[in-house]
Image (cartoon, rainbow, N blue to C red; front, top):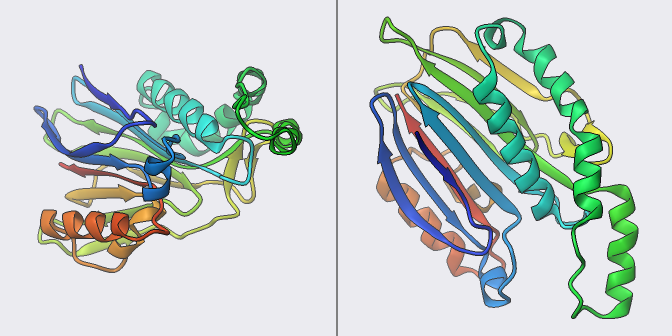
Length: 255
């Protein structure tokens, strides 16, 4: 089994992993101010690959909610575990199954958030505000998916997204063939489940792309650009160099 779970207090330099079926490139970086203050990233990246099945999730906590980093990690881990357990029906009825699953998480997620401690070193007024936010739950934007390598050499895909995490597909000649809509009003809440319109769902029973790239809004510099390893490295460096930088996480999957 191959896999990765980001440590929200630690950077993961751009790394590469080749399996029998996938080539993976991934990285995880806290915002400059977050690093300087020793705080957690609001992003969370996780993936797992076994026997030609790859499940992945990239989640971005909503900072105005109660400790969005906690929602991002909870949701990411749950989504990957759920996706790995699915079978062929995911590629037939995945839209209904996925939305139903999101709603089942709220009870456990609410208990999880109730147990998250507030930093004892914070001023009393800040603690009070955080406790009020706790009552409304914690929120995260997300992208998750599953790719299966089939016996005929083809691949099938289930993918869902909500929020402003970027999703881009490329053909084998580097041409971009799909880019997700950015819908910041669509996100997941530990208290309310899915907020906004239904999550975007993509199902391909025979993948018409060669490469899939996911990245958080901290790498918005990559938007509309042709993608290669040099462009990704340059965008990461530029993004983290600014004082107002945001957390950066990315996953590139080549079939």
